[in-house]
Image (cartoon, rainbow, N blue to C red; front, side, top):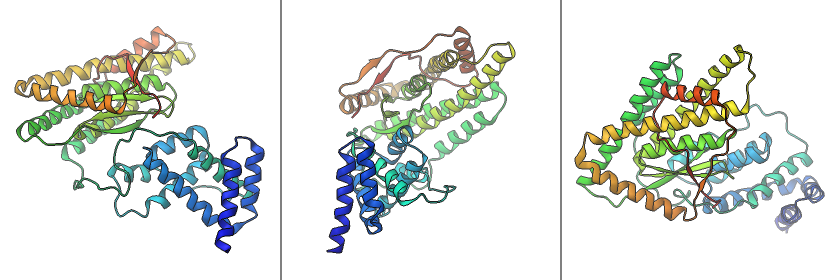
Length: 384
């Protein structure tokens, strides 16, 4: 009977807060919970149920963290981290990318003293209210508890080499060196993709293209989405941008997905550093920083990099002409899988304020940083 009473407090509070958006309902629900410490365990269990439901609806930990960060606050991010860790602790194994995402969640370190019970309950209910209204997304991998493919031992040697090259490119203060290092990383990616195509040609397997989600965070998210689209396209993948929830889904064969994420992340770091330097030059000339300068810089950077990366991929592919039909068939498979996941994609018009200096600086930075396809057009996906 006592357990039933505890659950009824939780259920009354959730019913009061989840089905209404006004603050009075939230305050009433938080007061119910604050007055009943015995309800805490039941409230925690309901949080785990919410996230488990979201796993089954296509969400992953990083997706939830991005959404909570955009719509709520740091306290809610810490709460989310605790709920996700509690729910996923029950599984003997997790998908590889899930483990990485959970490791990146806020663990509460450095948080201030605990809030009073009413404030704590309010924060929990605000988080649950957000989780309860999230829509279904297209699944991009297994859910915890499902059968997983055999785990690889360690990181592939090629990926380790790419990671090292890009780390050096980000760290160097010499643009020419960064360009050479990043170009070498793209060449390695292209050759690895070619090797994978050769293996597929020699021993066809039932493997189909997979997908991952990569965060595309504000500001200037459209320019960043174009950059990711360019990196993906140059490496035999497709990218579909979901502006509402701040990510792009990259579809491709497994061997290409991690390198695409690595290269995009590195190019974003390099581009932001180059933009900061360009703005410093502008300030020396007496001009203030402007939003249009930064937008134009990043768009030109993505645009020019696209052409360079695509050129490298074509050059490497031309070295093995007998594999071109295999590469073409893999790209058809990727396109088909993308259409299957996102049957209602639409072209998105670039929305940007024009700044000639920003564009010229961005194009110059692209010449001294990396290689990517020249696509000012990307595919935008409707929310799942």
